[in-house]
Length: 123
Image (cartoon, rainbow, N blue to C red; front, side, top):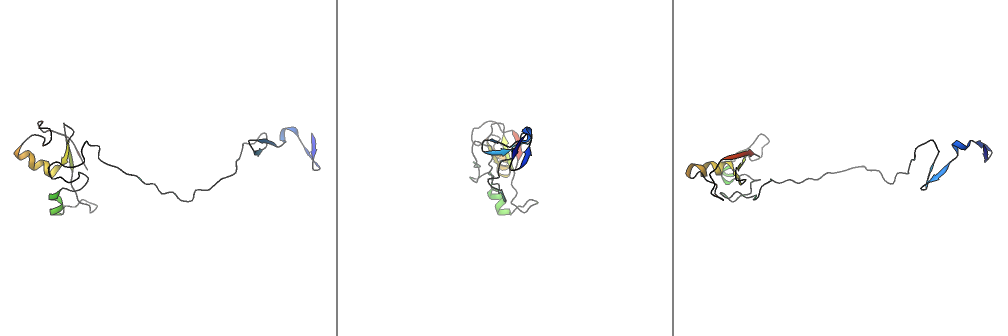
């Protein structure tokens, strides 16, 4: 036991310095807070996983409504213009409205001329 400023201190409770942070031997290290996070805004961006993001039939981006849907003002449940994207087995993407009219005349992909069959549909 040793005496510090008139108090008896046991050796196991003596303060030590580790990396400039004061601690007691049987306590965890508690560094000072450098800052407090008060607000955080996350920003995200997405895009279609396609080779070309433009519909080759109407020349409008697949993320936007096709010309036909824009003219008819088709809306989905949330009030946004509703236009579904369709991918073929060849991995080319088009607006469903555009491709349904195309397939009536020619059952081949407009870009690669493979026979058209739908791989998946989505928004």
